[in-house]
Image (cartoon, rainbow, N blue to C red):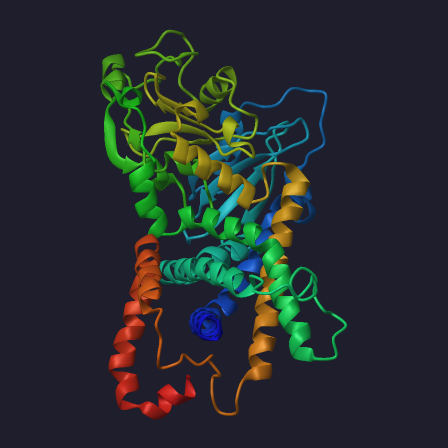
Length: 484
């Protein structure tokens, strides 16, 4: 009996030691990932919180441009409203038109000036008066969104944000592992933070671990739902998953340009789900058949050609949108070139209301009408995730829930830095030590491989660190020691 007990105790001791080594390996991974991710997570949390409340901020900052005094008369035609904006900015090109969606709302027209400015011009729909402009390159929401998506440095910033988001997912998962209770020590420090502790390390540890546990699902959701916007992972993901039935494009001339080309970093004209769909082409032969190049009739339903006497104008295209039940807040993008099309697009708070309609600029034929019903399962899930991520799906409650996630990220970032600073040795980074005898290298290697397959930029960064370790650190041991 004595021998058996000793053997069992030895096995238990070895198991605990093995678990401790694995714990320290995950802690070390968590530490290094946190050092890289924390500054970027602070940027994402702050800018994301600002952009969450874009509707309220827009009304507060630009209410005098967005709202008009409703008169008893009827609104002017949209063609005349566009002409008024073009007269005020004669050298500017027109991007898209957002028709007035309420009796007291102005019409918004996106314009690019000859000196490179991108503006939204506001027009009173009753008087055709140009109310003013908003610079779409330099306003609070635009700057917040550019920082959020690309750090104001374009593609390089996009890749950095993507890498940080992918590492943050792994950081959250490893944080849950580190938090996971390993003994029956009660609720304090596990389920409730010990905020009255005189030990400051315990105070900051609990302030880091406990809120992180409660908010982990929201944080993971925000990180994962943001990935489809990224330039590398998101592009590859969209290429694989955002397909459409072939019948949507049968007998319709297609261009090599994708519908997503209408979108920019700060201006999402069409829904994510249609970005990989090809833009149809108008048929210039319809104009030639008329001889004088006059506009052709616009149909009220899907057709192969004209059926009415109303010419294809901005007003008639807007009427098509209304007749087809597109929600009030939609945009119309004019044709680009002789084969371009009118694009009616609604990026709605509820993805089920999204719409993308392409209209032949000559015949008025409906070349494509893509709705929620046409989305495959993955694009539907992504569209729903985007709406929830931006706080749009269920109003103010959605905004507050996303804000809670962002503020938790901010709290975790700050408390993590404080924890590191309090335990950091003089002159060293203070990373948790990894024992020389490490029996769990196989599962760790498997996790690294899986993480690299799921997030290629993570794999690239790990490869970079390996090369760094085999070259620079190998010949500069003092530098390696300082970073340990």
